[in-house]
Amino acid sequence: MNNTYNIIVIGGGAAGFFAAINIAEQNPDLSVAILEKGKTGLQKVKISGGGRCNVTHAEFIPSELVKNYPRGEKELLGPFHTFMTGDTIAWFEERGVELKIEDDGRMFPISNSSQTIIDCFLYEAKKHNVDILYNYNVKSLSNNDGIFIIETSEGKLKSDKVIIATGSNPKMWQVLKTLGHKIIEPVPSLFTFDIKDSRIKDIPGVVAKDVEVKVVNTNLYSEGPLLITHVGMSAPAILKLSAFGAVELAELDYNFKIEVNFIRLDFESCLEQLKILKQELAKKTVFNSAQFELPKRLWKQLVIASHINDNERWSDINKDQLEALASQLTQAVFEVTGKSTFKEEFVTAGGVDLKDINFKTYESKLVPHLYFAGEVINVDAITGGFNFQNAWTGAYIVSKAIQLK
Image (cartoon, rainbow, N blue to C red; front, side):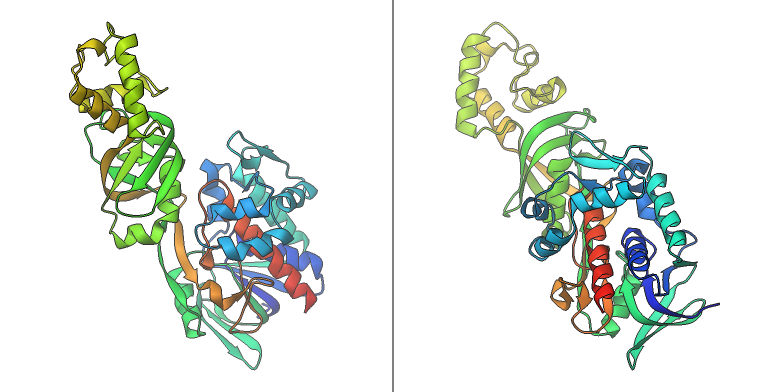
């Protein structure tokens, strides 16, 4: 067996495969290997997007694309000018994988199967003579006179250049610390909120299409659709908040209060509208006349929480009840008591400190010829294909940087 390579990629996920394939394609004379600790690679690709693989997101302006990255916004602007969404689409199409755009901007293979992406990568790796070494667990990494020595569960390997694409792997972060890298302590990102509250207990599945959510006593704020679940709240309004607030919410030990504005009107404007409705709908019951395009089931729960009986008519309700309803609609406070992983898409904030990386090449500033791609660095994104785009971009730039040397 060959134990010496020009390039070794540690990590057989999205970023690792993309880097290895592009390097081997652009440099046919170089020997390239991927080390994967598991029996198979590309596990996150397989489960992403409910098994459909959310390859990227239909945002084609770099300065807009970077806004989806709570960590990495500033650093990714340059790289996205080199390789971003349009380049990703073209790369896959040139290899026979056509992508489609869904209404929310997410992009998937038209086959609706992540296996299409996996098959493409495996085919390309084989075509360009990339060795894929499964069950290779990396124990240590050292640099001896410009040659990398990689101790693995299957023996020792040597390489001129190494790319780390191990995602959120605590063991690899420990290895990188031995080389002098600073690791930002990882915390979960992209999670849903656990909430026990009578207002939402019996209405799982209800969606409020456009809400504002604030974390009380912080500057954290988000907007968008909100889904009530069996255990609390989810959907973009919550997931964005969890991503941008990942560090702060971890410090609060996931016990905090949120304030939800279900109708995106301020309290006073809402109260004025309710006073008009009191006149216009005088003979109707408040309980059965949902307003502000809110789902009926949610409206009814907010009415009950405002101490309005299900048989009270608009003409019957007093000033206090009206104000209570305005408050429930525009500033309802819920207590969050924990978090749950969003589907299988476990994402962490944390990793190699961005100050340790040259973003023109994704090379370590501390160890020459050591490169990074994907989530191993302190970059993460909201849901929607953005984490994969970060992987493709970093991996592609690494392949170009290695080609130049």
